[in-house]
Length: 127
Image (cartoon, rainbow, N blue to C red):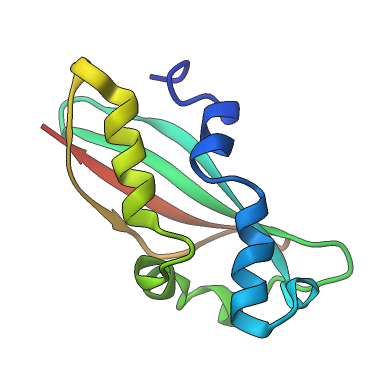
């Protein structure tokens, strides 16, 4: 699975340009964004039938990534049409091919990994 969902593949599923597009839609100016959003694969829990991804929120130079800015984001990201997390899950399903299929997905609570990195877990259910 790590080969199937390499960093390069994750960047195709969720292109780095999505960050600027998101902040352009949100604020009218991409430079107003405090972070870049990056999709990464974290692993496969075969016994639970789950694929684990994460949306890394990487602090932009000269900006401040604070908890009160990121903790409400799972709900926002779930619904935002530009980020299209549902489409990300569908693309994962397509990439799985005959090895499996997805049955649902959810964003978990934001984790503050460091001052400059917060993460939103994306859990995709498999059948």
